[in-house]
Image (cartoon, rainbow, N blue to C red; front, side, top):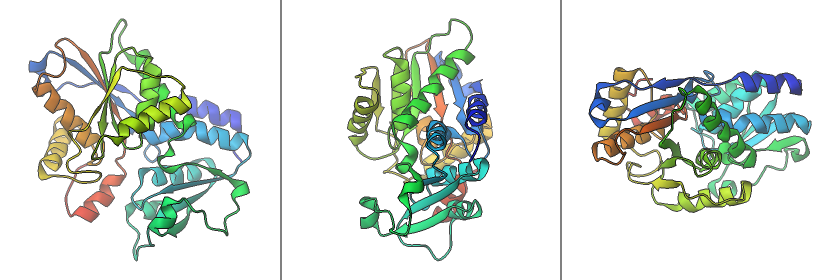
Length: 314
C-alpha cells in the first residue's frame, strides 16, 4: 500500500501549464484565449480523469482498500486512467467492461491488460445494472463509478479553477470558462469553484440536453448549492457521442498543425470547433478573456483511428 502522505505530496505537485493561444485566426475577434493543458499532466494519467481520480485514490488508501474497481466501455478513457494509476501507485485494479469480450483487444484494453488490470466483461443489461461478478470480493475494493464522477471527483476538478487563477497574470478577470462534458463531473467542479463568478460554457459530447439535469443533480448532491452562471452548449455533438463528420477530423488535424495542440474527436475536438464557431458568430463579447480546459482524452485517438479507419494526428 502506498504511503498516504507521500502520495498526497505527489498529487499536489502535479499541475498543468496555462498557455496563451496565439493564432492568427483569433486576431479579428479581440479576445484573449488561454488553454489549461491538463493533457500534459502525465503521459498516461492526465486530463480530467486525473482530476477525478486523485482524491479518490487518497480516500481508497485511507480506507486501506488496495483494489480499485470501476466500470467503462472497451475504449474508455476512465478505464485507461485507472489502469495507469494502479500501475503507477501499486494498486490492484479491476475493470468491469460493457459488452462481450472482443476477439482482439483494442488500444485501450491492450494497455489495461499490460497494466495488469483484471478485466471482466458483462452483457449490456448486466452492465446497466452494474452487477459485480460474484467471484470478486467487494469488501477489499474501493468502487468508483463509471467515468470517475462522484463527489470527490467533482472536488478534484475544482482545483482546475484554483490553479488557473494562480497562473494568470495579475488582475486578469476571466469572462468565460469552457469545458467539454460527458458525465458532468468536470463541469460541476468548475461551476462549483467559480461560485457564480464568470460564466461557464459546457460543451456536451452527447446528443440532447439531459446533461443539464445531470449537472444540476451533481451540484445538488455534492455541493448542495445552485448556480446560475453556466449554460450547456449542445450544438456541436456532430451526431452524438463518438460520432463525427469529415469537417471535424479536418479541423482537429488543422488545429494540431497550427497550434501543436492535439485534440480528440469525442470531447475536446468538438469543443474547440464550437468555440471558434461561436467566435465567428459574435457570441463572445469583445475584449473578453476565455479559458479553455483541455481535458485530455488523447489516449482514445489510437482506438478511434482503428475503429473508424481515419487518421487523426496526436
